[in-house]
Length: 486
Image (tube, rainbow, N blue to C red; front, side, top):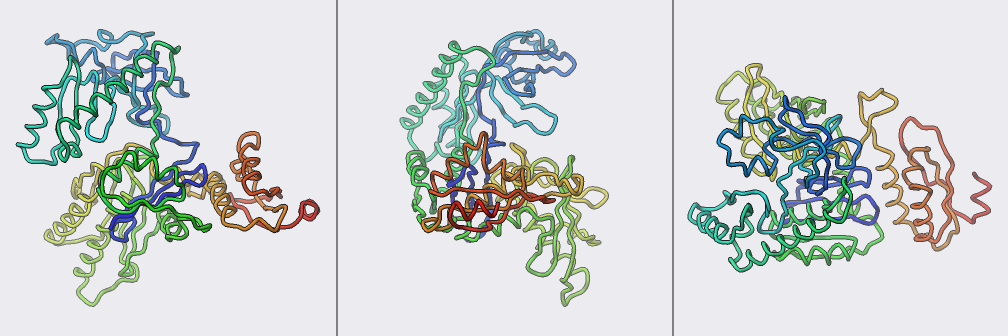
């Protein structure tokens, strides 16, 4: 049984995926770090770097985007047999205006990764006005793939390209054509808007939260969606035609608390993860890689040491695969399993990990053991991990550890207030640190005023000095009583 539990009561939007009772994914979106992936801009080329075969494009953000040669329509469509040896300046000039799409978000000091090969995504198809190629999902027999390749070729115009998604196989050619025409019209609207704005400008903005939801529902095919916002359910019903049951959650208790997801979410931020057999894994995030260490802990077993080690490593391999998906780690992952002398034991652990990684919807590859005995895994990175949204560098430890961010604490306070009965009181007093208060109140106290109107109560704060971002609901009462306590 698949379940997707959605919480959109506050400006922090989040959902969890449970497959057969086990949480396999969290998605949390806060206003401060909403993804730019899929957004389409009219950009201006700021500089062209011959040595890098790339250009830097101003899209109106603090960092210029990075655009590589092979992501230029002019390069793709060039018939010059020597084009691979030509400089990038042959295809793009400084000051040129062009449509670009964000493929990867800003990470650290790096600006967004861009492509000028625009993709408009539908349920069955990815439409590329300048793509000039046809690709078909490999999740089907060759005869089915050939059939859909021919259909796409029959309807391909000029420089168009298509990626036929797995979802197309269950539909008809007519349904596919209808969707392609819709995607073409969507792109024409973007082209029209391009001529009406001044560069740099945002032309099309993707709602990442809803897109990720639809993608998960399409992948899982059927199950139950439970949400505390009826309008979100109505939107999802329009997009999804699969066998899903939609349930509106009406209780005062926060939906994540009700389904015990707050505990799971907290565990997904911990360094140490205990396994059922008493062993544990330690997860450390670094700039270069995610490093995972496996320890026997309290597990000694009744067998020989070698058997205890193998059993621990196998159990850890399954949990590591789940944690990679749960925390949404990308890039290089290095796993230090407990040393195994037997080649067969190492092979068994590798096979276990590979099997578990196949359940991951993101492209993940088990590279294998290095000469030093470290197991290397790579996982496609499309956005920052869960920790980047929910945590921030600790001011006390100088950035060597992590604590809950002020935004996360503020949203937790808002959810807690939503569960309280305010009918009997005029005001509430909250002890809070300055950063969390700022995050809670919003710019010019707009969010605070909105909440006071919603709750029909006056909210007062008493500032506290704290090494971490925290709050405490101190007292309810009349406005006069609370003012005396400030």
